Image (cartoon, rainbow, N blue to C red; front, side, top):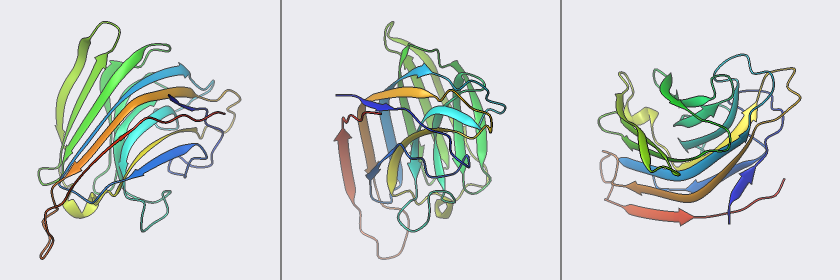
Length: 204
């Protein structure tokens, strides 16, 4: 089964989306997220890279605070650039163009690893049809600390914040695999490991 999401108009880039999916994971030292994603439609009037997005695959901190203000890090398909970007709320923040297009109708395998102690993201994007590796890069975010990245969930969501949007984004996610391993460096915290695999579906 596939997870299909057709977002609606939302108030804020950081607002909790109506169409969203969360999978709990333990706060960890190393996070890995892999999923296959296809963009079927982009919104009609995006005016900034981060304002409208077809889908974001992300690590998030959601247990203690509203998602509208919580820390998160992920890869998203921007409706404005129609390309993949690395996005971060927390610490210094970031919105990095990964330089790979997210073409409508094409299936991509997205993998994002996050090493908390080194504040390093490892992004890999492949074209599923051809098997080509389109991106393999490391981004170390200066000023990002473990306290900024106590992620306890994996989330998938999209949305539009451009005021005059009439046509919403549409994307499909499949073959979701998530992993969170190792403890963050805190006194009296034991090592823990968890792995979750999920494939879900949702109608409009």
